[in-house]
Image (cartoon, rainbow, N blue to C red; front, side, top):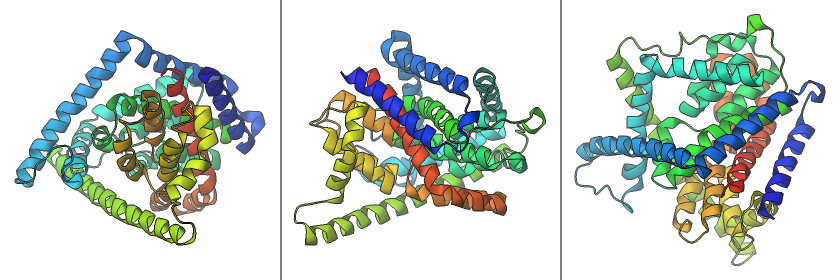
Length: 395
């Protein structure tokens, strides 16, 4: 029964994307079909084979080792604070972003990441028929945040039509930055966080290429990685990466304080009118039918739905912090589905972040992004639903 509901959820997700499409006749159904098969194969391989599980374990162990290195640096600076479960969230979780951001900056300066991303993107473009820039940006968005991923292709922005701009913006919203993956893994099961990264890339390329189909001439489809890093030395890369990571950590901390306080304020206002009712419960009922289709058990779907809804109206860090204490009470399947759903930047605030970044690159195109902002969020929610549903089929 769960498999049938999952298949129905996939059909409905693609159906909604099709209804949102601005050019239904130009949709590359073959490319979408190929990516769906690849997505199913990747999920099956990761969850249903010993080799796939060993790969996930190996990657998780590598991240955990990097987390240890990061905690050494944090421990030196905040000596006297205990870095353990239940400790200070800012020190335990958010400051790790600084080390991961530094590492990404160095790998980018050394051209290691850009070359890997370029060739993986080229392979995806070859297999699926999608343009190279969109494929490159899809892979690039796994590693870098919304702003950084868009800035990496700024030299190609003059080639981007409205539909192409939609796809690259969707990739930025439907992904997460590798610099904060380590922080996520300290809150929720690491295997689901890691699997969500490639699944969201494929889900986004499928959904966005249905909503905004593109057909690009070869002369307008080149990827230039020369401008990815402007650092002049490895030490400058380390310094800039650390500063960027520190800025992200402070921004996340500020947003968490603002959003969680705002949730409490909204709940207080609601309870003045409807005693005992919270915004989380309301969101749980809104997401109830979606959760059932995704494969969440009926007795757990209200709690799960409230977390998913909270993520959309706030951000993934707020939702993860609320979901973390619930993971031991819920089934493994529900935990997996919700964790994958939460692992993306799909929320209202991301519209402003992406539009602001595009404005810094090309002010005329920022107007276009602002115009399709709500459509961008709707598509990215479908991406999260699709990825989480795929995972649910194998749990």
